Image (cartoon, rainbow, N blue to C red; front, side, top):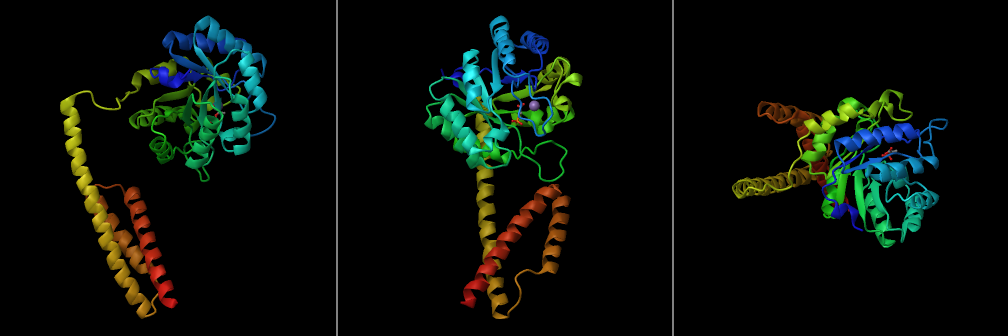
Length: 355
Ligand code: PEP
Ligand code: MN
């Protein structure tokens, strides 16, 4: 069964971080089912926690509660599998959708073992991104599944471990899921704003961003009473907050249905193509001048990097950027990339000429 392709109208995965007790699971699922029957209910049965001595999920018994949700409320249900024996237990409990979490996804050995256990089960699998922004590792996990005949797969973008202080718990690095989509255009990709944000206050903005970027849908941690949640309490929505989120979001179409609008977009795209081409030609011209200077520097034994010049470039360009309304950090990054390439070329000229 190609669940994700067949059920392309399913746009929401919701439910608590962890399965804590039967009442919590059934009450949360009941409320969610009243909002939307086409939700994939989620709950972590076995929780991979960063620190020991924290709540590890209710364990095997919670599979019965998920099974009840499936049977009584008619919701699809899903949980995380981190070990081959989880796969066996999930199968026995009649659960049909699982996900591979970010910690597991960071380890090819673990993913291979799970992929082997999943072979021939017919389960649908959602693969979260690894904790660090390595798109090849994410794709590698998907390939391990495909090679084992598991082809009902979706991906979940849940952000990347922040090595520096950041407002969010995990950094979105949107370019990574965008690259995943470019390389696997038919793959269904959900976004998990709960684990990106780490805090309720950021969930709206991250969710809308994901929809603007054409993600299929969202995984939102939702709890009947988040204040007392046993894991991830700061990022879980209660039912009312979840409902408000759904009401406030603008879901985007992948392509405009209106022909006139499509033509208009195509016209503007042509202009953008033309500007991009000019940008590339200008960059090529800049690099030509850079090479010329490189040759002079070599001839007169002058160092490649000139701090004063770089400071001057930054100052003047950023001033100009501000005056024409281009954001400072964007232009700063762009200049850094251009400057880095200029330095690289000049260093190469000096090296070659030393031979
Ligand atoms: C989860 O979904 O509850 C979870 C543990 O997420 P992640 O693997 O993204 O940290
Ligand atoms: Mn969680």
